[in-house]
Image (cartoon, rainbow over all chains, first blue to last red; front, side, top):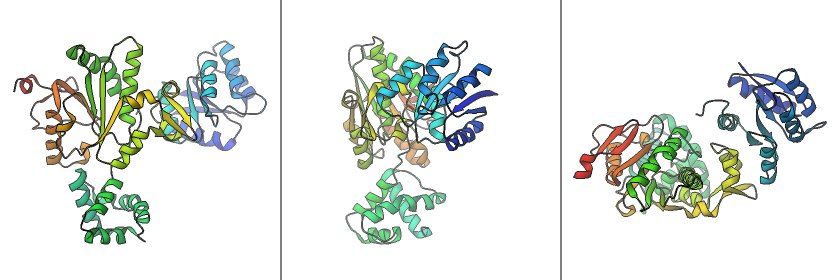
Length: 124
Length: 272
């Protein structure tokens, strides 16, 4: 089973994402900020990362830049999941190594669509 | 909930005006979709609106009811395999046939425009790979309401996140308040027309490629057959009809052949 790390400081968002992703047959690990996420990745690189932008301790974009420097850090497919919806922010995320970008609020259909765009699941 | 008699009237009007067959299990959904219209028109309920429609001689209210129930479920790059094939095979073959002439593409049930704009984005992508493509995209729908939205090219954040890769979104759209607006260049590439598939598309001309996805399955067999025949008649020699995933050409349509999953105008029809 493929593993997805859900990184968000909101427990509610993590719970919603977990429910949808488990239906998509992902094994889920959670992190509440970028630093926790980085530690989780150093233990075991996931196949996919669903990543919030604004979080305490370490932001999503800082985590992503750091992740891509780590051994094996180029492997996880990273999908941003954030309220940031300006073109400049989206471009910044892509430049930092994001594979896809999802703007909150989202539903199961959008999450499914974005994971398909990122090549993590088959398109429907 | 609509009564059986009320639902029968709605189903009859929708079938007459759009060809779509409403089955009884949709009675609840029909009422939900007609409630906003009944409020806008000043009625206290959908039932009251239907009573008024029955005695209004100009048929305008029935037309509005049919329009409110028009199929609008769509998304960008719906049926991705179709667009992959459009890019790799269907457009290059059309260019080969046409030479320097422009190719003509018809999105026959365009709803709110996601399909024709996806076609336009596909052509833009091919142009960026050094293909010289002269193309005209005509997009039609029977609903003026849907065509007006499509023409505006404005989409909600939910709409642009269904089917559009993020790089495609930022390449072709810009933020407009809370909405996303498709680029003027792409909007200029698509011409929107109101057209009912129950009528012959004679004035729209002949096409090299016709997209007709996820609409004909809502028609009964006879209407579907007649509509396919009209589409076949609007197809240039060796032109292609693109259908939605899981859709097929009904038996009895003259002039079409399915080759390797592609619906193509036959050479026999070409000679006729």
